[in-house]
Image (cartoon, rainbow, N blue to C red; front, side):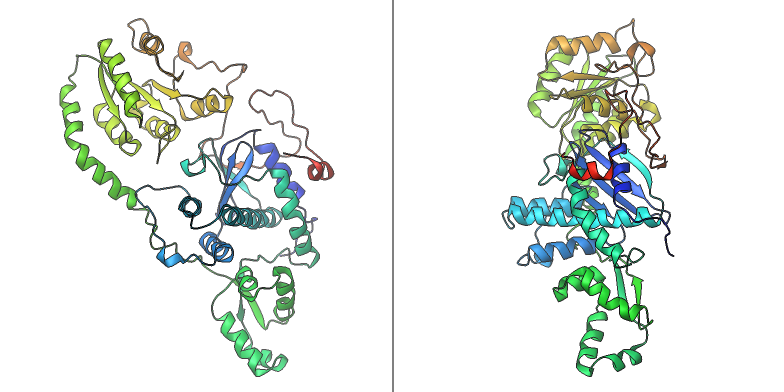
Length: 465
């Protein structure tokens, strides 16, 4: 397959700038025609982590070995009680927290990962059609305070010369994630000595990608690949796709199941008591999901004082199952919780038909516009800024539980009015596949009604984040 269009990095980064709102925090997921997926994580408009493709764990282990040679992957002691969206990022953060690696080592791992994945995405964008499969305003808990951030413009500067060198060597159709295999060993013997042939054969038999080979041989990736291409063009060597290596044995996704079972066992009695105390036709039940015991205590006093029943839930992992069982009439929900944040809990609740119209009120100490956008995106009904007061809570009671107002989220009278924004912001659903917008497409971003002026390639290079 030979592409006829000019190979460039500018198109991909321009598309990225058009797609990502300024100061965006969340995840962007991309997919090619072969259903390979990549996840890009942003914190305040800058990249903080990327993963995906067909060699995510291979790439991570190579980078960890390269920058942290004294760390033994097989003897890592990891906390698996909590399930994180990106185990790779979480492990780096834990190693840094435990002072097993330095900050510069952690930054090197993340920076190298960003450059590698962005290179792969640029190559995919030139060879194939990348699609956006989802945009989520929910940033995983492990990335709320990122170790390192890279602006899109800085990323452009880092990747551009690498991609240009690759294209100038006429390698744009060959991924660095391909692995060389011997196709005609008898011919290779004619070109090399027996010693070199045996070493080369032993090395290739280890099933290493071009990036792996460059690392283990301590050679420049481009120079090594150009040397191997002499044999590829003569069909002596073939470049093939390798499956990804297994994740660390210590990382078990079913740890969440064990954790939930453990929590449910210790809390089953209190949950059963709450269920039995709720009778049809009696006081309405209000639930508060907050990991802070003080907040739950304060909320409980305010709620019971106003004649309602109260149920406090401190474990976000138990929130959904508890809510389904007791079916509260109104839910207060904290944003910043470990394991699963409030936005994700709200999104999960809204997926259940029985809770389509149940008022969900977010409790937060933040006042940024992006939080309003996230709130609407996941389906919350209202917002309360901390600190909590009786007046604020009672206003919610009057709005959603009063006899004169029984309409909830779908009522025209109860739609959230965002500050300084006249139109409802539409974000793509997880099921929607969206093509990268063309240069002529007008992208409506929060608080901006003007068409984005796309930078030229020269201005993109010169710009600052």
